[in-house]
View 1 (cartoon, rainbow, N blue to C red):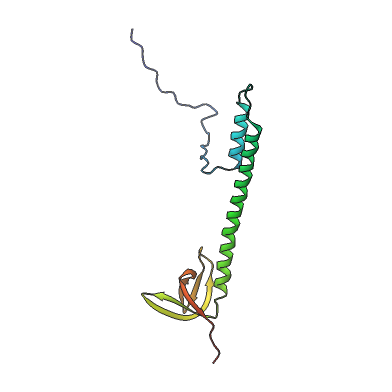
View 2 (view 1 turned 120 degrees about the vertical axis):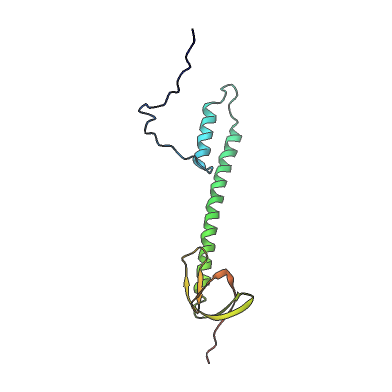
Length: 141
């Protein structure tokens, strides 16, 4: 007597029919760390519990990581604000930049903050702030 192979079963229960797929986390954060720590504590061997010093060390490392992440974010925001201030201070000044190997000079008319690097308009030409090579104050004649 031949045995028929089992057919593939598709999940159509009320729990899986409309279940939304969750995208995996791409970064480790404090939530993941604490989840791992709780899992480790739940599944530890009662006769050989986790060392308290090790647990305190791990939570201290977590706090340090969170502070470094916050500091990095604040530094990035600070740098962005400094670029905006520097670009805005150029309005009305004579600036120079390189174009096709030649130095071009003109008066900065306006500044745009639409991109990550501010652009300065010089005679209708938009120049990125980091492309400006010199600044002088236009002397009154």
